Image (cartoon, rainbow, N blue to C red):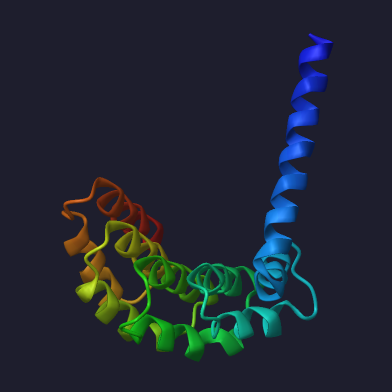
Length: 167
């Protein structure tokens, strides 16, 4: 039993070392954004906002997801811009929607609803629905009521859950 645990610990530590090397090989911005998401600090907001402008889609996705966790009110407008960007990937919009919900700024409601109306990807719709679920607003309630019948079961469940939490 003990040798099994030791082997598991070694594998986990090896995995962490390999991940660190891979991140370092990807370049400076990737590592900075990753660190800002995992270990939020004083410079996290600035690093994550800079990450939204990266040409690397993974960096933009991580930055968009991280901004909601950091609680950056300064990121509301850049995240709304990302939602509206036709070049953004569904994952970028999913992260932007989730983060905007966590930030709770009512300015984000209309752009999130518009993004949801145009979202074909179920993961993107899921992120936007969970984000909208943070707002107790009549506009949101109507949209969520409609999405309880979404073709994707996870989107429908997220809409139902959000409506229950609004009551």
